[in-house]
Image (cartoon, rainbow, N blue to C red; front, side):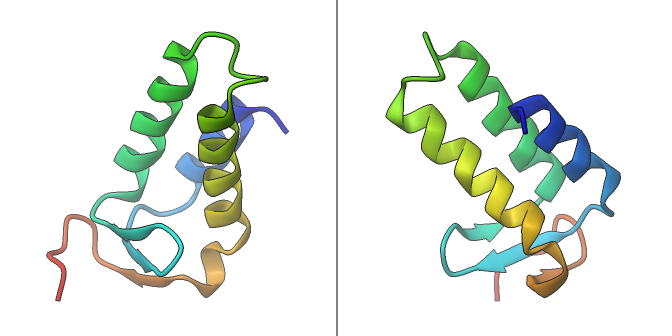
Length: 79
C-alpha cells in the first residue's frame, strides 16, 4: 500500500482527535495525515529513508486500528 493510498483511506474516515499511546495525542487526524504525507514526500529517497518508513508505518497502524482508537471530536484539547 502506498503512502498516498494510506492518506486517502484516512481521509475517507471521519475526522477526529486521537489519543494513542504509540503516537500520542493528535488533535486533528486529517491534518496529521496531511503533514505526515508532506514530510514523507519531501524526503529524498523515501523508500530507503528510515524516518519516512517509520512515519508510513505509523500512518498505516493508525488506519488499521482506527476502530479501536480512543477518539474524540476534531480539534479537541488534551485532557
